[in-house]
Length: 124
Image 1 (cartoon, rainbow, N blue to C red):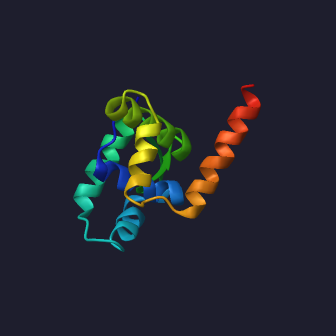
Image 2: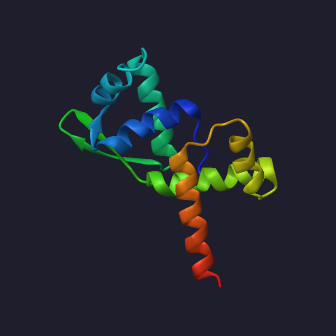
């Protein structure tokens, strides 16, 4: 399991949206939300390369970065880890917490019903 910090995740998220990207292009996209220093972004890129979350290829005098891990597999890994750590592997307390605080949208409920129905058909 790859440990990715919040800042690293923001960088990775930009690259998931479009790749390959140069460091300058990544900084430009990150700066649409808030100010990032180029040196900080390059440090984060190097960390992600060392963690094998990103790969790169050299094109003339610049590096182009691309993801080595898929967004969906990372989300599944993090979701599973969260549920395990905070809820002893039980998903229902997490969903109940969202429902209790009115943080479930109608679409969320419909998606959950469809998932449960599909699971029941496959596991009967």
